[in-house]
Length: 232
Image (cartoon, one colour):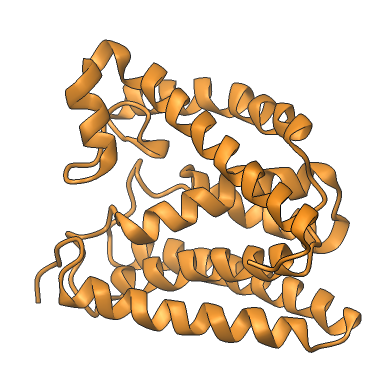
């Protein structure tokens, strides 16, 4: 069986089931004790790590391993951020989860870059489940107000990007990959709209502008939650 198209019946079915899973995760997390909440976080982290290891093994065994295989996407880095937070939570991990991992995983689910993978195959299932787990790790923390971060903490995310983006950009240019979608957009996604509007020379700058705009929206929502005592 071939791949799928963005927002076709296959994609929408996945999104519906992921939404149900996310709802169950949020409300289950709300009603369990603090120690069980910590266990939930650690369990999600180890599931993410296990899935990534299984993916690497699958690629090697099926002779598909290539320069595209390392977990250099933003969501791949999310594995280590979730693990860091699950065991040593602090403002840095909270900020990275909220400003990088959450929007990255959510956008990946809405505009997946794995549409060419055979439907029902390992990589197809892995990609949806992996990104769903990332979102399921973070959203319960938001609802329970356990992500202690403010707009002033954005420098932490900026610093991580300043450290990782040059290396990833060089890696992409050297090996013709496209991790973090830095070197070219994914067709049929908003990234393509940016590329078409601003061209190759303005693509990265416009992408940075969009990321910053997303951060503003995220922190506005977080401030509304704090001031009005509401749960998202």
